[in-house]
Length: 144
Image (cartoon, rainbow, N blue to C red; front, side, top):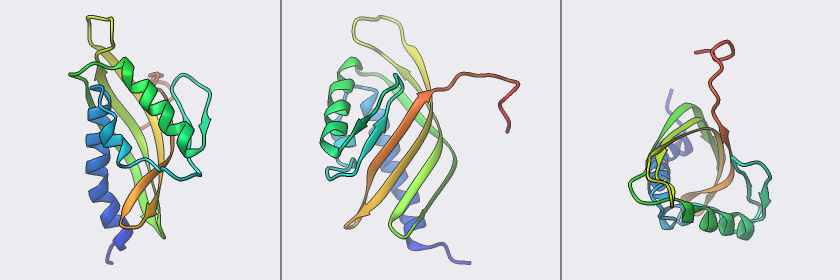
């Protein structure tokens, strides 16, 4: 069975998405700016609660929030599953990061549960929804 073109393309794109995450936790928003939707609809459910709706409001939040990070952060995605078809794509899993926050000397582990949705715009994928919240280990509820 041949994988659909969207699926193959999305798997390649996820390398760019992971690099944008690494740059973001080091205080650089530009790589994320290349892949976020700049046309609504777009939403963001952030780790601190609340939400933002509309492409402009979402991007503004990302630009503001990146300022808490200093260089040297690390990030990697642990993808539980992902798929792409008919111009829509998603991935679900964990973002495991170590961050350096402005005003704090020690590195901070920053582990999130993440769901992201993307839509095809022309020849690229654009992030239209991110839901990220803290991963709190509860051994009795985690299943492999």
